[in-house]
Length: 428
Image 1 (cartoon, helix red, strand yellow):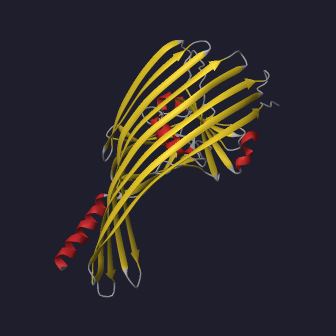
Image 2: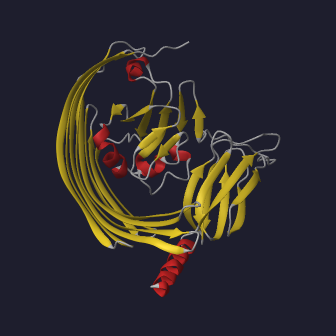
Image 3: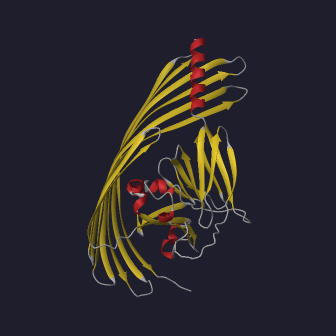
């Protein structure tokens, strides 16, 4: 028994060391400047970018990385690109000073280009087209690099300083139950910019201390048919595949879009916890392997009745199947005599199935040339969920036993809404 316990302790220790991560922090400043906010930070390993992020309002950034050699590249408009190699075998803090660009030229050519981040009165604009993060990721991963936006591992969004958050695509509200699926299927290559609206217009004021994320897609001026197909492959702990196809037809008054996308994504979540007290010592190691299969279909139609009136409809359908396997090991030891009080091993299997349907129709009437618009929108959505959870716990203590938890559940709910909004643009 003692030999098995030693082997178990060595295995847990080896696993913890193999999964050790360190914090790489950086403080970015410029000549005569305390900090440089929203600078682009690329972290590369073996010439491959593994993480991209932006410095925050205070000019700092932070990333969790495994042990190894990394190249750090920091860039910001008007400054020379900073590059440094770091051998990470512990927590590291970098003090980075960017140097101004300044070159004497015989001929000067001025090219207009928007900055990466624009701070306006009521919003912050993240110009994705100018970002190193605007290629090969989905909208959720892109939002994780957007200033003031936090994305949790389950795909939920939070705007720092706000109690609630709404998401729009081209000014059209995305239903909460469709949000994760829509954003996971939307490719960053199709996004022009992201508006983080901290002070929403008056028509949203009833939502209280809320914020809005408005994702603005790239506009294609072409008339006629357009077909695009994209696929991507990512290798992390596990591999992931994303594929999408889009059909678009556009004339002077009519536009139709159809998109189909799907992904297979597997992730591993690791956590280790240690608790020490005079009564007992507790070591807990948790491993979760999650695989998600998703298929999303969306279509939209828009017709200009005349220069002042538009009608249209949007429909989204999504199917997702998530499977997760995990194992939790808890070891309780009496510190007074190093005696093992109990060892608990809990493998788990979790399955979630989701089906989403959302349909909305709208009518927009421009009342004048100053931006005053009346919008009428009707929406319907339905969500079906089927969840299973099986956990077996094997407890090795003075009272050896096993316990099983088996939960099954399903739910269906739907909602309808009709909205009327009158908006106007105020200059001055």
